[in-house]
Length: 158
Image (cartoon, rainbow, N blue to C red; front, side, top):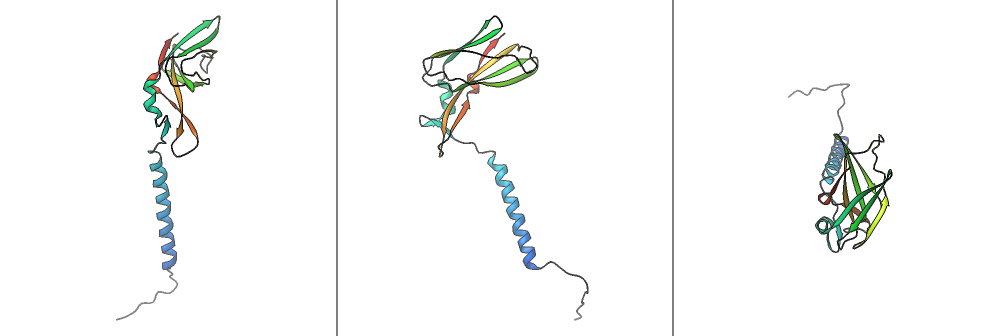
């Protein structure tokens, strides 16, 4: 048997190759973890049950009053759950914009506030939809998070 000796050629040492393989596996695992984390949502609870389940219990009415160019939003909360804030979606043509209207309406109360309903281009929308948002506690944490009840929206034509 004849051994051939190759001069001037060097290979990768087994230690370096092992370290590179381990680093590659760790980077791939981190990428898969970050990708999969997007599929898992936080559990937000109120009264010991998921906040999304309480959205069906929200009973509120909204009326938009035009007082000589100044619009006021009258909100009546007929339910037994406090509304943390309202999301207002404005529609004009094929475009829409969403904004938060930050005021709380406690259960069984009514509240009236001025609201700016003009769109970003300073034109007025054809209609708006008002969605209630509830606040709950993130399960396993001491923080709160607002959840918008997208199935409970009320449309108002202008």
